[in-house]
Image (cartoon, rainbow, N blue to C red; front, side, top):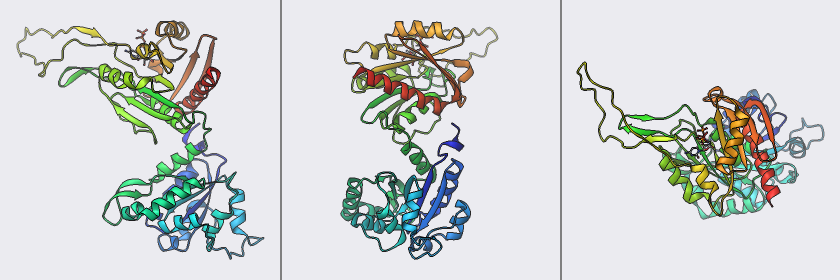
Length: 407
Ligand code: CTP
């Protein structure tokens, strides 16, 4: 599934209440439409002080709904019609005042009226708070947020950082791309709700001297996609990442490491507390036995010889986790250049794990797509060529089905 179809067929009712973050909602409409959604914008009177309905209509390609007395609706019931058509209602920005109104069940303008009249079972309410940090920290707001959650709304963020008022702290609305990803995640089935998943990703870097080292071409993309898919499926995810330049998927706890030994030390104490362990990292099999304290230099003479150094074997992280008495459900990866099925089956036995995911390493390193071969004691199943996020979601389905069998 490409980025342009992640929200295909979804109809989003996007509500704007008053706040400077309204400018981010313009970008959000663009991103939602780019992801395949249709968007109906609804604005409170206060929102109109920050951004014009003209902008929002042009971006959403639909007239903006603003008044409960709008006679354009044939039945004059915009507050009913809007949510009957929508798959989800997202209020972004949600001001402190608007959140207070939601909590009290007030209905004196179209946006609050619509939220109240929404069929809660089939049209969830997602709320992205946006306010100054003192307003966010105020006990009244915190009390309202707790009540909003208790009433079944999903609260997205807020983020933290620079604020329009010049202060720094919690209360910023999430960025448009973050809200889009939250919506995409919202629509994924919660197959791993209540489960914990630990995952390794990326290469390791084994230093030779302070400026050089041994590493490999793993980009970490497959591992990061699995971490994202697991978080979307409701799991609590810890991602132990080697040196990669990838953004942490939303909601994922990340631990950065460089070497195989650091990865081992990050994983082993955590592993038993998790339900699932997925080892996607391309861990270096060997490391230089000693790291030279200073940079190795050429001596400048024509007769200089190339330096040589000894290698020593790194511990096998996956095998060590699979040998724990209270081990999680372990999934290994096999990156091969040929004879995928044969090598994957050998690895299944050698590592003592219930599932190995094979892929042809050189063909996939750094790319956004892949093809996988799932190998377990029962047989094998091919997940045909697709983007890495779609494959990751498919793998999460397979893992969740196996966890169900274990119960
Ligand atoms: N792995 C690990 N720790 C290591 C080496 C590998 O956790 N020190 C994990 C990888 O993350 C992967 C699986 O083991 O899930 C397969 O790794 P691979 O290096 O392909 O296996 P090897 O046993 O080294 O087999 P080969 O030498 O055939 O590549």
